Amino acid sequence: MSHVKAGGTAKNVHDSPGQRLGVKRSGGQKVRTGEVLVRQVGMTKRPGVGTKMSRNFTIHAAKDGVVNFQTRKVRLFTGKSVRRTEVTVQ
Image 1: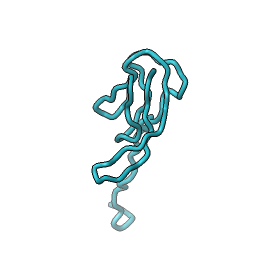
Image 2: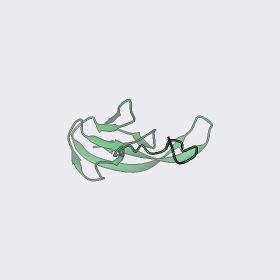
Image 3: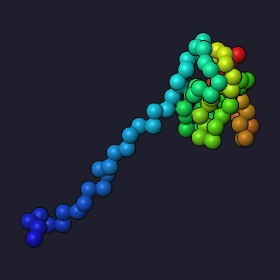
Image 4: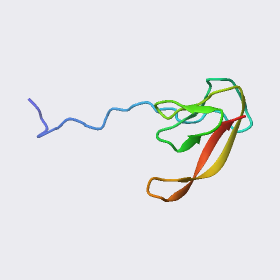
């Protein structure tokens, strides 16, 4: 029999590990085909020439070369123009 009245269960006690997202190769770094350049949720960074994007928005190198990051203006579906970072391999 409980000695404390209405002692419920704790709900927010489970903890999950981090997803290890972010930029994995910096600008000017040499990469080989298939290497992960950026791990992200959503399209915060866009794939450019020499890169490809997988189903979970991870950007991979499509060829051997040097990574380059540059900002571009991208038009959204609503017509708004915003700056986004484009990842390329040359």
